[in-house]
Image (tube, rainbow, N blue to C red; front, side, top):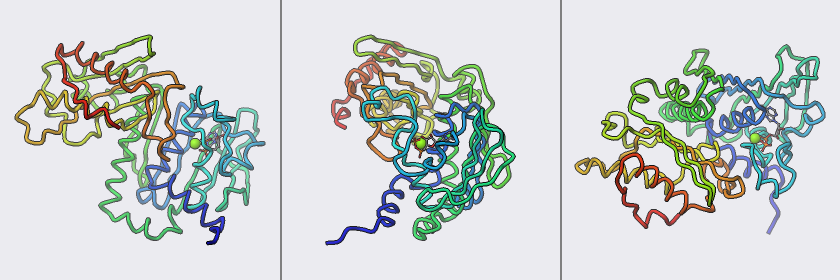
Length: 350
Ligand code: ADP
Ligand code: MG
């Protein structure tokens, strides 16, 4: 038996974190949000395979931190695992930038409020700075990722033109989720120099929904909330109005059912199943039996009662009080529609 060379270990673990264009974007976007950005501009070339650029107006990276910003397991967000109990940032593992460096050509340009000028840093395969030069950009950080998966021909070839279009749709769905959860964020997406999508800063969640889903979808939605102390759970959402014909806005695709836990867009099988059962029950003759309504559900619980470190992309979450959360979602459905959705106990095994 032999120990794998460190370059191979690096590549194998990086490609678990960076699996696709959308995974790069999610990591870069979350870094911008963690830096307090109120404006984020994303540029893609050739669906992100040739270039992904994320520019923000956040607090930037301190000059002293730049040598380790892309070295794996370096983070400014937590100091030990105990900090996960109080986690308020999207990032915490210090893996993303370093992982991207292993599968693409990466440059980071950054300026904090105390720096005179911004500096562009070119990084190598291991995330070390190999070159730096002054730049004209203002405060904030711009990360450019060129030639994604240049050293992984199979993964690059996977992106046929059909897959590329699907990936762009996933990028737009991802941006929509952050646009909904962050009303005061300005976001834009430019693909091959054409504006593909944008959202201005707005005052509240309803305006954010209008800007992302459009007036006809929002006309069918009703704000609703639920709060309890023991265990502490807050639910806020926009659910289909009772009696509304949401058949036109729902489909067999869950891409407009937005679930957030502590501001993170997540896939939660049991919450999704509960919602789907409820809305499907209203269309007993539907042959698909698989309805996903357009809705938004925000679940807020103390950071100490969730574990988000289940998958590299942090889209799965373990809720320590899952039963209580599901009961709260049922209570919200009952308060809106006045009937029991009839939870299937098999839905509770995750
Ligand atoms: P993590 O987000 O888990 O800390 P990353 O590899 O994504 O790990 O980022 C490493 C570090 O680089 C972050 O902790 C942060 O200090 C810095 N950083 C990355 N992107 C930005 C950004 N857009 N603005 C400010 N700092 C950033
Ligand atoms: Mg990060």
